[in-house]
Image (cartoon, rainbow, N blue to C red):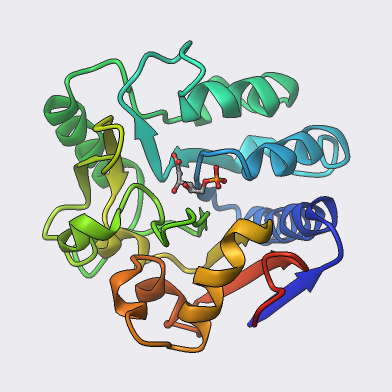
Length: 239
Ligand code: 6PG
C-alpha cells in the first residue's frame, strides 16, 4: 500500500505515527519494539519530528533501536548514520542507553559485521534462521539502492549472512548493511521516500518497467503485503 502526502514533513509525521502505534501495541503485550533505522538525509526530518511532537507519547523504554546500515567511519564523523540519529533524535528523547544498538563504523568492517550479526542473533527473535525486526525503515537512493545494497552488489539481497560488508560504488566507502535476507523477515517494512530525484526510479519500480529488477529496492517493494511506501507528492509525481 502506498501513502502519498503533500509535503516531506507530512510524510515524516505519518511515519512517526506508525512508529508510535507499533511501539504502543508491543508495550501492551509487555514486549520490546525492535526497529532498524536507515541513515542518509531523508530520515532527519522524521527524527526531528519524533524528538519534538512524539517525544512524550512514544514509549521509549520499550523501543530498541538498531541500524539498517552504517558507513565505516567514526561515530563523530558527519557521514555516520548513528551520529545523525543521535544528534537529531536519541540525545533528545528519554530512551535508555541500553536500548541503543549501534553498528560500530570505526571498527574493521569484517570484524564488526560478525559482531553485529552475533548481536542481532542474541537480541532478536529469529525467523527462517535470520533476525526478525518489528519494523525496518528503509530509504531509496536515486540509483534504486536501499540499505547499503547497491545495484552492483545484488547478491546481498539473498545472502546467507544476516549482515554484510558493502561498498559504495562511486566513493568506494565501505559500509556495513543488513542483507535482504534479514530485511525481508521483518514484520513490517516502511520505505520513506521524498523528493523529485526519486520519482523516475520509483515509477520504473512500481510499474515493473524493463530493468526494474536491477534496482535493489524493487526486490522489497514488490512484496506488497509487508511493505508500505510513504511518499511525498514529488517522489510520487510519476506513478
Ligand atoms: C545510507 C542509507 C541509504 C539511504 C538512501 C537514501 O546510509 O545512505 O541508509 O540506504 O536510505 O541512500 O538516502 P537519502 O535519504 O540521503 O536520499
